[in-house]
Amino acid sequence: MAELVTTSALVAAASARTSSYIASHIEGKETLTSTCLDTSKLPRFEKKVVGKVRDVYSCSDRVIIVATDRQSAFDRQLASVPWKGQVLNLTSLWWFEQTKAFVPNHVLASPHANVTIGKRCVVFPVEFVMRGYITGSTSTSIWTNYDKGVRQYCGHALPDGLVKNQQLEQNLLTPTTKDDTHDELISAEEVVSSGRMSQAQWDVCARYSHDLFRFGQEKALEKGLILVDTKYEFGTDEAGQIVLIDEIQTPDSSRYWVADSYAQRMAEGLEPENIDKEFLRKWYASKCDPYKDEVLPEAPGELVNELSRRYIMIYEIMTGQAFDFSRENSQASFNEAMSRYFEEEVAP
Image 1 (cartoon, helix red, strand yellow):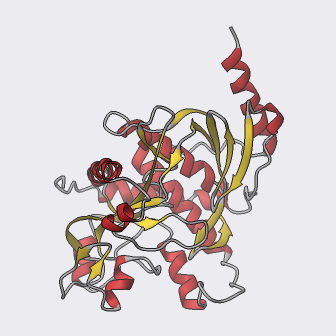
Image 2 (cartoon, helix red, strand yellow):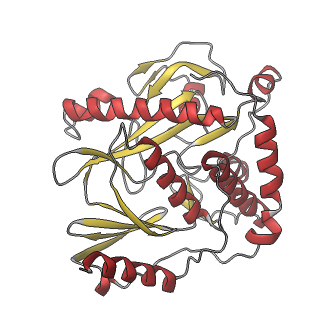
Image 3 (cartoon, helix red, strand yellow):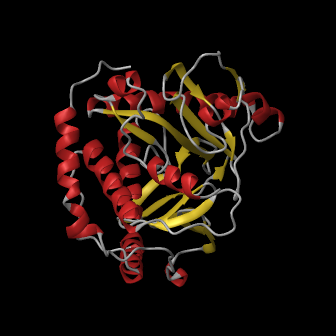
C-alpha cells in the first residue's frame, strides 16, 4: 500500500466546505425516487427493471442506467438522499475512466449526470466484495460473522484475536450471491461448483477485483482516505469480453475512513472517522431490527442531510472537482438528454 500522505488539511477543508452545502443546497432539496423515461424514444427498448438504487432500461444492444436518490441497507429502502444519484453516477464515471486502462468497463456514454449508457452484458450472479479491514454491521459483513465465532469466511481461514476495524493481513475477496432481496455469503469454490461462473471466468474477475481495489486504496490514500471495502460486479459483453459494470468505489458501495486519525482512534478504542453510510446503518440498528421489523422508523432529516453532505464530500475529495448543484434531475431533463443523445447518434 502507498505510503501515508499527511492530508488532514485536505480532508478538514473538504469537511468545512461541504458543511455549508447543507443549508444552501441540500436541506429541502426535492429527491429523485422514481424514473419514467419515454421508452418510445429508446431504440429497441425491451424492459425496465427497478433495482435498489438504479432503474435500468434495457434495449437489445445497451442499457440506460439511471441512478436515483433512493437509500437502501439491510435489504430495505430506508430514505431518499438529496443529490445521491448524481454523486454515485459521477463518482463511478470518474473511477471508470481512471481504471479503464487495466480493467475494461461497460460505459458507452453519459448524457445526463444521473445517467450512464452501457453495453448490455450477461451479468454474473455474484458480487465481488473486497475487504481490507475487519468491520461492518450487516448480516454478511466480516466483523458481524467473526464476532459470532465464524473463522471460515467465504473460503478464508481467519485467525483468532482480531479486533474490530483492524487491518487484515492481506486484502480478501469475499464474494456474495447477487439476489434481488438478500445476498448470501459464498466461497470461490462454491461460485464455480454451483455453475454461477466457470473457473476461468472467476480467475479473471478475481484478478480484476484485486487490481481495482489495490488501485483504489492507493488513490484514496493520496487524498487522505482509507478505502476500507467495496464491491464490484462483472458481466460479459456481446463479444464475450469480461467487463466491469454497475458502479465502482462509490460512497454507496464502499466504506471510506479518514486516514490520519485511524491509528490514534484504534489505540483509544474508538470507531474510525467514516465518510459513508455506516452511521445511518448504526442509527437504524440502534432503533429497531432492520431485518425483521415490518415497519422501520423514519430517518431524521438531519441524518439524511448529513449523509448527502458526506457523499458529496467523497466525490469532491476523490475527483478534485467541485460538485455542480446546477444540474437538474427532473424527468423532463432525463427525456431531453436522452432524445438529444440518440438524435446525435443517428445524425450523419
